[in-house]
View 1 (spheres, rainbow, N blue to C red):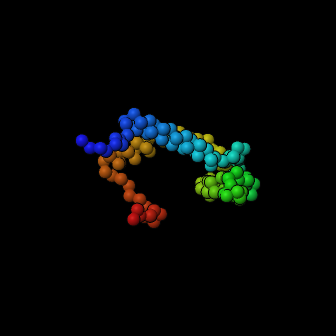
View 2 (view 1 turned 90 degrees about the horizontal axis):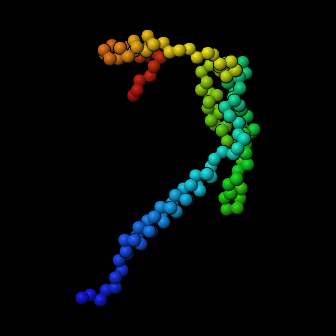
Length: 137
């Protein structure tokens, strides 16, 4: 017989430790997940305007909100929530006049869609126009 003390962990204690670790991890994740939400009262996409020629993104200084985050006691600079998003969205609007007076949504043209599916299924796909399209290389 060996004089070694019994140092094995009992299965009940191991399960308890795993459950406790899981609960603590979930609580930490829940707490941290709320740290970086934008402040309330932020403007929506209606802040993008139309000047008669193009879409105009909002003034980013108007979107600035003081940061609630601190770094070693020092407050971080203001954050301009949504500035990049609204600026990119304004740059991507195909028909800026639609921001002011949106056109009516017409129904899909079923004949054109069916023709495209038929060409695809029969192997008669119309190739891309190489003068206006890029290769996938």
